[in-house]
Amino acid sequence: MELSVELLLETLQEQFSVTDYHLEGGCPLLGRPLLYAPDEPLLPGQVYLTKQRAPALCREDLCAIYLEGSVPEKLVGCSICLDAELAAAFNAVQKIFDRFDQWEDRLEQILIRHGTIQDLLNTAHPLFQNPLMVMGMDFTLVAQVGEEDLPAEQRIFDPDTDSMDLFNALEQDETYQQMQRSREPFLYPAHIMGWRSWNVNIVNRGYSTHRLILAETSRSLRVSDGWLLSRLAPYVGYLLEWEQDPSQSGNSLHGLFRRILSDRTADYIEMSRQLSRLDWKEEDTYFCLVFKVTYLDKKKLAANVICSHIEKTYHYSCSFLYQEDIVTFFDATKEGKDLDTIAGEMKYFIRESFLKAGYSRAMQGHSNLRRQYVQACVALDVGSRIRPYLWIHHFNSVVFPYLLEQSTRRLPGYMVSHEGLLALQRHDAAQHTEYMKTLRVYLDQNLNAMQTAKELFIHRSTFLYRLEKIKEILDSRLDDPDELVYLALSFRLLDNEQKKQEPQN
Image (cartoon, rainbow, N blue to C red; front, side, top):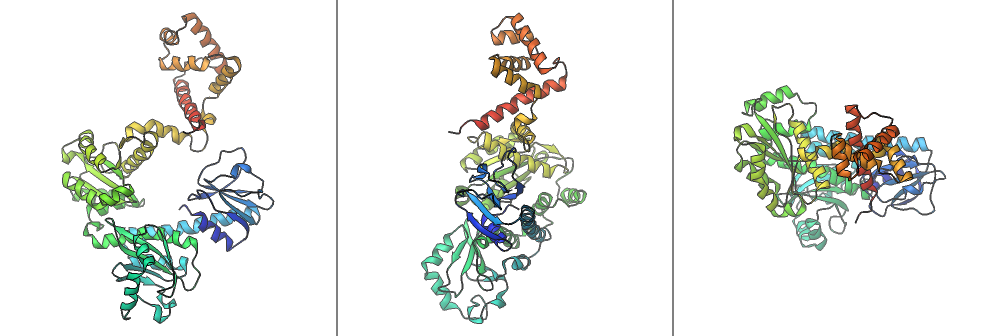
């Protein structure tokens, strides 16, 4: 679970003396902590701890925690200064991430076992230490916990209390009206209800149908409470939708696919049997489509409407909302159409609805359904970054860029490239030769000397002279197929590295 910088700061303040901090700028959601090392590239969205002055950490896309004598003269971006030892601070930050990871795991387990909204609130209450409520926009109380901490006269959602005058006052309050329209956590003052509260609206089909409320009683509300409440709200919204939609049943097709995607411990043999009983056979061919729904789309065309439209158009499809995306599986065999045909038919709907879509490969059987979902997500993610002007992305069109990205997740491109090629690059820079270009064309021309010389507009003997020099620098005969593949890949890795260093317009 990634954490907000406010949550990290407020939790650290409970354990250490925070001597200074600065939270202006981008302040992204943060991943687990790393120790700052001057020779390693900095990753955005990470927490870095350091005992030394590190000007490189003065960035807005990460969080720097300075310890002992390492505080810079001016704090920039997301910075926290602690009076603590490095080991103690690092372990404390790790435990903070562990704590909230475990909390989110417990919430997910409640969904997997088809628990209740009350279960969610009971699990969240120890973390918030204040009363939690889920209330309909008509003031119908759905669930609550910790209400005993409120004075009797302030339990305004108690069904035995006549609170009509209070409800009328809320409906006429401008701040309350603003809160009803908000899509972000909203801190409501105490002037009507008698206590301040964080509120998050739960939206279904474009409308706010319920509200998740955290009341201020036992502990003063913090900035991070609003962010944490927004992390709890989707779980509440999911169970509200489940309770209102019988198709969410775990025995339904929608329920089975949700479990396949969410439960890594599921018995896939049993899942396959259940799919077969619903006439989605093991011998059939399937593929997955994932839609990214923008804010504009949510206003114009609700997710449930999109799912319904797809299932009415393609009778052997299963479409549902999962982790804020729309996921659709197609049984291409029963539909009697292959992936390209269905993709061609859907392209106009995707564009006219202002959706972004990613397609997996078509594969036979049930064993790869979750992997096909991952393929579709990769297609959407990588495709949207490298070709943002396109609406639709197929996994096959992004496989190679995806492989390049995966190969440089931990080390930059120049550190995993062929070492001899780097030596060749240095030789070109020092001697003003064109050995890199010559080798690249040679590889592109499948080691055809005549065609390479023609492409370079040089005599064949000149090319052969260059080739001997290249082999000498590479310390290679260029006859190993694996090495040739490695060299070709290294050229692409270095290209990507150069693009990263070029200034963005």
